[in-house]
Length: 275
Image 1 (cartoon, rainbow, N blue to C red):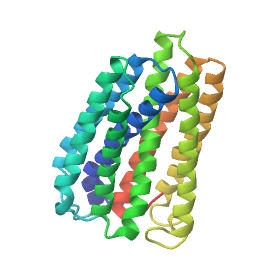
Image 2 (image 1 turned 30 degrees about the vertical axis):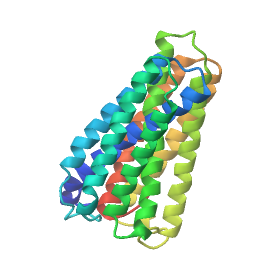
Image 3 (image 1 turned 60 degrees about the horizontal axis):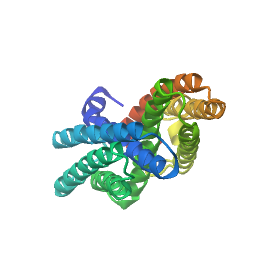
Image 4 (image 1 turned 30 degrees about the horizontal axis):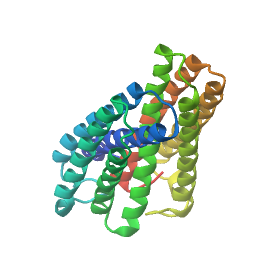
């Protein structure tokens, strides 16, 4: 990608990154609230952080530049609906967080917030793409990025909770690291599908040798495979209640995932390449 493409894609990369953090972390919190005995402090705090992330996305969305140098196109007809979906996600995440802090399950609020976040991503993907052939794969990519990015952020927050309240059950972290490993495994599978088929644009396996090959290989090795290994290691250490080790592993995993998400979002928005 050239300098102009990178510069103009920064706002869209921020949009993908921040919405992914908020949506993925809220989805994980809703699941942990229903399936485990995670503490209400962690659940409420993380849900409120998801709301703050949504608020940032709302401001970013309002200031997105016209993508003249990017692969995507402007979608003025959907801008208002996308903004409303982001606003709904933000409000619902805040409300769910407050309810969870008070000890409630907040299942309906949480699920509604997740749905609003997915709708926001759908309006972005289908509006910015040239048609459903490109829009649907882009939406799948955005949802996968959200699961990994938001899940990684929430996992680090949860791991820290064990450092200050070490007597809580290990079940939430065990489930979180297991789900994170599965999400990274699905992301690896999607990478192979995108590259092998050339979806949505480009020849099969062309991404591995094209002009962006360095970024593609970094995305695969440093941004997917290595975090997957770290997530599995964190899962195994959490089984033995080695929470400090799990926290360290998750910190490294989060750093790599954030960089990987930035690369994936930049390639998707700037060149239409899904990896």
